[in-house]
Amino acid sequence: MSKKNLKKQQIIEAAIEVFSKNNFQNSTISQIAQKAEVAEGTIYQYFKNKEDLFFSIPVEKTKDFCRELELHLQGITGTFSNIRKFIWYYLYFFKMNPGYGRTLMLEMRVNKSFAKTKAYDSFKNLTDRILEIIKEGQEEGVIRKDVNIFITRQLILGILEHVVTRWLLKGETYDVLEHYQDVSDLVLHGIGLSKGE
Image (tube, rainbow, N blue to C red; front, side, top):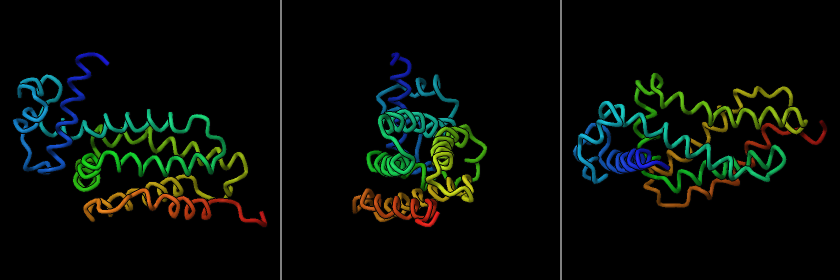
């Protein structure tokens, strides 16, 4: 990673920490600069303003998520195994990044400007990946052909977002991965072929 990218990453990580602790409205560029150990002017070399920095966070974190997800999916065969791994990795990612989870789920996703940002667009890679897995399952004959793949994608992501959001609202007092098996079973029983098919 280049020195410039390292500095940008350092600012992003500091911003996550500050925003997750203070929320967007109560956070300042000065606080973020102090946490990142850079001058305030350095932040403006990478981001136009506080809002630009705020909505740049999921762009960078979604790249991390997708890159790591692909590593986790390496060597795994079969649609159901891939869906199980996707579900496990989604929960694991937020368990390891609770500050980002608080910023994304509790503040950013409910912001009406979110759908108009590059952050919203960045989720396309993530949502496209689960769509590919579902399509492969239909082609393999393990997922019912009558299942709407777009609704199924929303179902999986909606359940996962709810599980993570509840965990965050409860103060992360339990292991969010304890729901992995139940979520996987619910999704796979809902979309898989029944024994008679």
